[in-house]
Every structure is written in C-alpha cells, then in structure tokens.
Image (tube, rainbow, N blue to C red):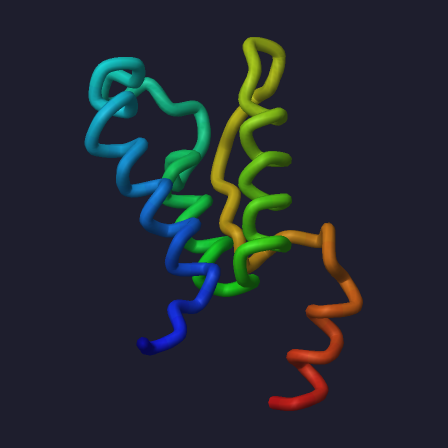
Length: 92
C-alpha cells in the first residue's frame, strides 16, 4: 500500500468542509479576507504541511472576527514561522 502524505488528509478535510457545511454556513461574498479561509487553509497545507499548515489555518480562523478589518492575506506571506522561511530562501 502506498504511503499517503499527511498534508493530503488535511486538504481532504478542507474540501469536505467546503462541499458540506461551507455551502450552508458561508454565503458567497461574505468573507472579509482574500483568499477565503478555506482557500487559505488549502494553500497553507500545501505549502507548509499538515502541522504548520493547520496552525496557520487556525490562526487565520481566530483572526476572522467582527473586530478585524480583513484584507488581503496570503499563506505564503505569513511571518509565524520565520525560521522555515529563511531556510527556504537559503536553498533557492
């Protein structure tokens, strides 16, 4: 049996959310942020893996509240894991 990367399990959970509860609880065009929280989670999981991506997605969900201003916020522009970012730049 082939090994399934954990990040793909997280991505599957986000897609299940989008296709079920996301359609019922989040009307189109109501997000304060761009990209939407589910797209942010998909981007974070794809780029940083299951653990770090889940932490970033959770942090994004905590920031989505009535007192936030919203705006453009991409997973690749995050500053929560600065050591990981510096390693990626060094490899490039």
